[in-house]
Amino acid sequence: MQVFSLMSNPVQKINKKQFFTDFLIEGEVEKVTIVNNEFVEVFIKALKLEKEKHKHITANKIRGKIGPHYYFNITSGEKFENDLKEFYLNNNVNPIEQIFPDVDTRKDVFGEMIGWLIPIIIMLFIWLYVMRRMSGGGPNNSIFNIGKSKAELFDKNTKQKINFKDVAGLEGAKEEVQEIVDFLKNPKKYTSLGGKIPKGVLLVGPPGTGKTLLAKAVAGEAKVPFFSLSGSDFVEMFVGVGASRVRDLFQTAKSKSPAIIFIDEIDAIGRSRGKNQITGANDERENTLNQLLTEMDGFGTNHHVIVIAATNRADVLDKALVRAGRFDRQIYIDLPELHERKEIFLVHTNNLKINKKLNLDFLAKQTPGFSGADIANLCNESALIAARKNKKTITKEDFLDAVDRIVGGVERKNKLMTEEERKIIAYHESGHATISWMLEHASPLVKVTIVPRGKSLGAAWYLPDERQITRVEQILDEICATLGGRAAEEIIFNKVSTGALSDLEKVSKQAKAMVLIYGFNKKIGNVTYYDSTGQESYFNKPYSEETAKTIDQEIKKIIEQEYTRAKKILTKHKKSLINLAELLLKKEVIFKEDLEKTLGERKWKEVEKININKLRS
Image 1 (cartoon, helix red, strand yellow):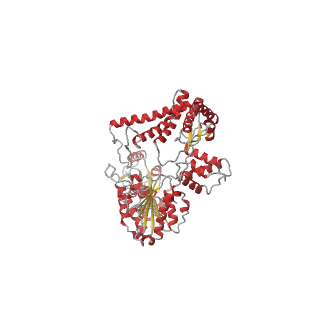
Image 2 (image 1 turned 120 degrees about the horizontal axis):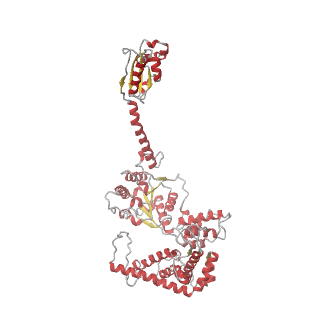
Image 3 (image 1 turned 180 degrees about the vertical axis):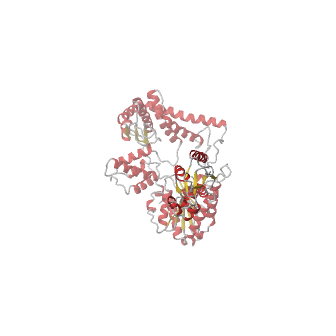
C-alpha cells in the first residue's frame, strides 16, 4: 500500500547496489528521498536523463521530467544514511558533490480506506448471512419481509392428498370439524336461521392423537384458502415482529375470505400472561398474544375467517384466548379406543403387504395407550422387521416384535450378566406374572422375557383393562402385582435387589394418588389435594404438617399391606413360581399359553366392552 503513489505512474525499481555503482558514483543523482523509512526515491539530473540507459524513463513525459525516476527498498533510513557516508569516504567523493537524503513521511489514504472498509464489509456480509438464515432463506424471507407472515397457503389449486377418509377414529371431533367446513362452503344455510359462524376451534389432546392430521384433512376438504403455520413462527428476536406477523396473517386471510387459519402448537404464543415474575421478560410474546386476541375478536362474521388451533397444553393457555367469542368450540381428542385403533390399523396397513391371516382386532387389543402416531410408527417398524427377515408378507410375529421394540426398546442379546443375575431376573419377572395371574383386577399377562431390552434387564408385557373409572380394589391389585417381583426375590433368595426400583416408584405414585387425590383413605377422608389448574405452588402445600405426617404413614401402610399380601400369595403358590421361573430360564421368553400350562387357566374372563354409539343408534 505504501508504494501505491509510485506504482500509479510506473517507476523503475532498482536495488541498493545499482544505486551506488551505476548512478551515484557516476554523479547522475540530483537528490534522494527516504519515504516512510521503507524505501528511497531517486531523482536523476536532467542532463543525465539523455543517456541511453535512462531512455525508458524519458518515454513517460510527466514522470521523465518530474521524477522520481527510480526507487529501491531499505531496511531503515538510519542504515541507509550510514551506508551513504561510508560510500563517500571509501570513494573519496568531494564534499561539495556529496548529496544527503531528504526524509518524507506520507499518509497512504487509499490503504487506510481499505483498512477501514474491509472489516465493515465482512461484518455486513456476516449480518446479512445471519439474517437470511434466521428468516429461513428464499426470496420471500429476506430481512425486509421479516414482519410478513410465514403461513403456508393451501387453496383449491394446491394438491392436498389428505381428506377426512384418511382420518381414522376421532368420530366426534371429525363431525365437529366437518361442520366447520360446511359453514364455509354453505354459509347461507346457517346465517339464514340467524346463526353465526364460529370464530375459532381449539383442538386439544395428547401428542400424536391426530390434531394436525385433522387440520390437514380440513385443508384437503374445505376448497377454500387454508393458511397453516406454527405458533413459533410468530416469535422472532426483533421487537414487534410477532404482532406484525399476526396483523399480516389476518389481513391476508380477510382478503381471501372465506378462509381458514390453522395455528399448530398455539401454546408457543398463547401462554397465560403475567405469571413471569421477571418484569419485561415476556413482553414480546405477550404483545404477539394481545395482537392475536384483538384480531380474533376484531373481525365480524361477514368475513368468514375461522381460526383452528391445536395444542397439547390447554392448561397453560391464557383465559382470554380460550373464551367464547374467540375459540367458540374446544374439541378434546383423546387416545384412541379399541375400535378406533382398529380403524387406524386399517388405514396404515392399507399400503402394506400383510398376511391374510393377520387379525387387526388382535393388534388393536395389543396396543392399549397407543396414539395414532404410535400405530403409524408400529406399522412401519413391522414392515422393516419383515424386510430384515426377507419375508414376502408382514405377519403377526412381525407386529409383535415391533410392539416389543417400541415399548421395551432394542433387544440387547450381547448384554453380559452372571448366571446368578439371570436367575434373580427370572424369579423377579415370574413373581409379577404369578400374582397378576392370581388376582382378578391385575392386568392379564401376554409375554414375559429375561432378554434385556433398552434399559431393562427383563420385562413383562400385560394387557391392561381400558377402564373409564377405577375402584379401590383394582388399584390395590395392581400395586400387589407390581410388588410381586421384589416379593419373589425375598421368598426365594431371602434377599432383595435394586431391580425393583421402577416398581417401587410406580406403587409409590399409585398409593400417593389413593391418599392425596382420589379420597380412598379413611383417615384422610373424602378430601382431595389435586389442583386441576396447575396454579398451586410447589413450596406451599395445601395441608398442615400434621396431615403431611398422616399422609406419609398411610402411603407406607398401603404399600406394606400389599407387599405382605404378595408374599402370602407367592408362598402359597411357591411350587408354581419355581416351575415358571425355571421355564423362563430355559426358554428366555414365555407367553400366555405357557402360563396356562404352568399356573392353570385364569379364573376371570375378560369383560366385554360396549360401544356407546351403537346403543344410542
